[in-house]
Length: 434
Image 1 (tube, rainbow, N blue to C red):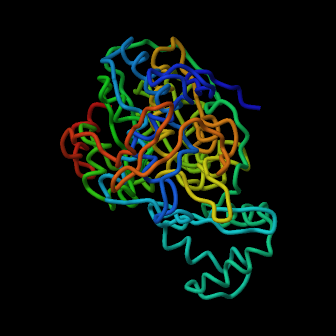
Image 2: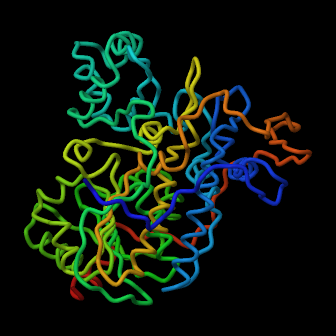
């Protein structure tokens, strides 16, 4: 069994004094975050139930500020506001039982709900194999009928074998988000640690961008054949997460480039990656061996590094649901926009900042589904009790409690720090130095 790591602590939920009188912690912060505006049906009010998420995000932001102030510049961010940045840039809004980004949706199984996340053309092409029938990809009603006669566990198992992001609601138990998979040699705490970023999309790049703000030197490594998929999205969002990083490109079919990557990782203070474990091992790159050499390693996974979990694909919407972040009912709805991604980026930044304070290297697995599960005590339901209530507020909405009112804010983004470098822009600078 993996060893649990207490580097970034999940918040506990209970009534505390918040400065807005005594109400459930996070209710007003959830309203102000921009993430609440993304939660619920498009035609109805935004949903209050996930307010514990704001508690966790605030706690992780505080942990990040404390840890970074010890070895670098103190990084102070509005944790809950990070959850809505992609939607702010992309102009996205809530869509209920379809994810904000549009690629994930709830489907009823014989024994509950599952989420299918289909962001890639290959995922749509795999739908007939998922239902084990010759069905046109456009015939969604038939897919729903066939999935409705299949158990949730069977759907998830088939999806995992097909490399699809499929999850059963609340399949992950509450617990610490981080587990240790390796411990290694001694390391020195430095003011400007070198961080090698092998991650992509949202969680990992957000994590390393926050370390960059603390003074870390970040080298972003991408495959020449399959660069970070976020490069295909809104340029402004990619810039937000990657400006200021050195960008290196490698061809992972070439021995020389794999050897260069191995040297680069072993010269670092911390490696951050988000691939499935078998991807690294297939290249002959051993995370435990790198940790043994004195380099800490933070692995971002969908469901974990174990034999079965490590085979599964996971993105922000489906892993959030797996961890209990969804709102039940006749038509279940998603919480915010791929919420496990920015939650993991923030929790991971706090965890990584603490790892950089340790005198010995450590390998840590941070799973998106476990991060989601750590933020709330159990799956959310429409009947969650709360002193706070949602009320109409002009053309918008507000949260009211004990005579106070906070407007439900729209998603917002931090100012850009510049433009991210093009793929491989810094090869000539970084390669000779390793």
